[in-house]
Length: 187
Image (cartoon, rainbow, N blue to C red):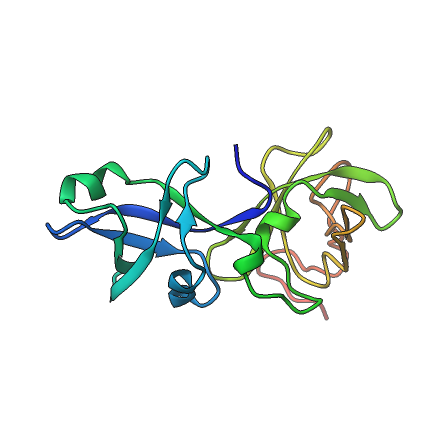
């Protein structure tokens, strides 16, 4: 079980070389910051590692972890997520949020009706995307995490307000009145 006072900042994707280094993928806005948050722990808190970044590698960093001395030790950690104490992370401006703070928030439409919860947050390079879940929502409903679609985030109240784009849920039909049939132009 994840400690709410800790935030996932990276994961070990395997070994690097034969001397106990690991290949480390950073989830930090500035990837090299992963080495500056002090000792990192596993999700259950059973293991703690001091991280020393040794060099950048494709999709991350090569790093030495305290207590990891062999390639076999490093291989055994493949897939391990690493967590930093929340107190070690920098404060964010009012319009920025840690992904972990968004997951689980109640999602309301602009009329105040509950439509679900934030199931996850992803970023595949073009910006953050919220996955919503709830009764009446299609499975895996994704919306862009932009000011136009999510005008209000209130962490203290545990909610986000979403101005749902037409056609995503329920009986909403996209407005196509100003769209010409394929291959035709409006005059």
